[in-house]
Image (tube, rainbow over all chains, first blue to last red; front, top):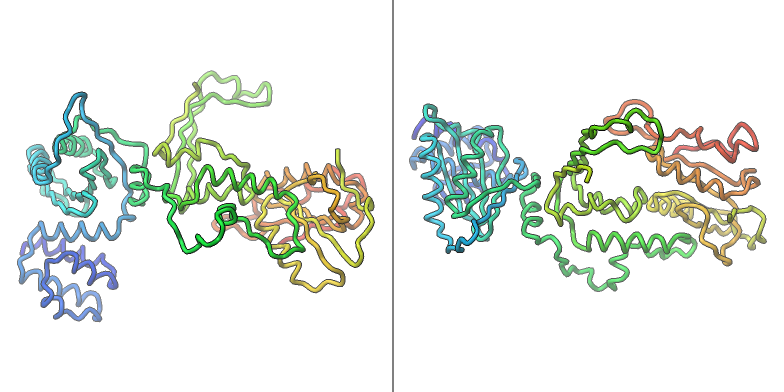
Length: 339
Length: 141
């Protein structure tokens, strides 16, 4: 086994927390059941890793096997990467061909190898007609850097692909080209949507987030449940503004629905608008050029936070459509200019 | 303009009614629940309102104490309280009004006093007519 491959596998296994190790190794399916049984997973991590490397050597692990392990690790730790969304389109009058996975993989690999000579491309197919692609980038003269790969998740029955954002941005056009040509599309465009939560991005892009699931709460009448009112059993408390409260709950439910919101960490608004002010004679109001300003909303769960603003009494309902349109418009990056 | 007056209704027998006014409903609810858990000489009733004036209602008992709950981090909360104060008769301030400031604890990652409203601002406009000191000192939750 190559020194670099051994080092690569070692570093990958070291990243895996002990409690996930057996699950990931089983998913990798490279070491046999018998081999895994010889390993004492209760030892100190360094000893476990050493034993595993030894077993990999016995079985002559290749670079491809190592890359596959890296893909699986990333699939288990998707939120460690930030994902961008790309949308492809076919040219006018182009037929919808039947998708051939084998042909796609060959074509994709060939395009990259022709351009760069030194590149490692690995694939792992998952359910839902998705393929995870791992690309380690080199140049004409240098070997691929296995420690800064790019991941692409392509849903073959759709024109969408999700790409992990990386620091090596000069390869992005080439990657886009390979993806487009191999999947028999004409054009690729980056959407203004980005998050760590791949599942939420999927839900937004494929419009799957607005499904209400029947829970065990469905015994309570829909009215009570959806109003979210703490129907206060204590008759000593009176809500003076119950009408307003109900209005806010209704508007919130109409805007956000009953279902859990997809998870996003931020929304960013780039403003290029003229300054507007009630005060007359303000220096800024006389300025002809638009002011440039960036507003960023951050939260561990932005959409749920926005949903709870009006019921919590922190904002008026209805909220600005700039905030509420995020899942519908499939954007969390906005550019706002004067009309 | 409807104004709350302290003595415009007859008192109910052995009953005290407190009105909590504030923008954050969940907080008012919490406060009301804790108040009702305490022992009270009379029967205690709590009304919760977002702002004043209250929606007109003949059935409302006489209000014995108004508590304005202000969030120190929210200008909106302060504005709401200021506007509500206009609907309170001056005589209420003789011992029947209380200001409660919330959010006085340290903000995580923020050093120094909490930003936002200053409790002293609440002395304007009504209470100032009576004396230079607020009728009841502001308490921190």
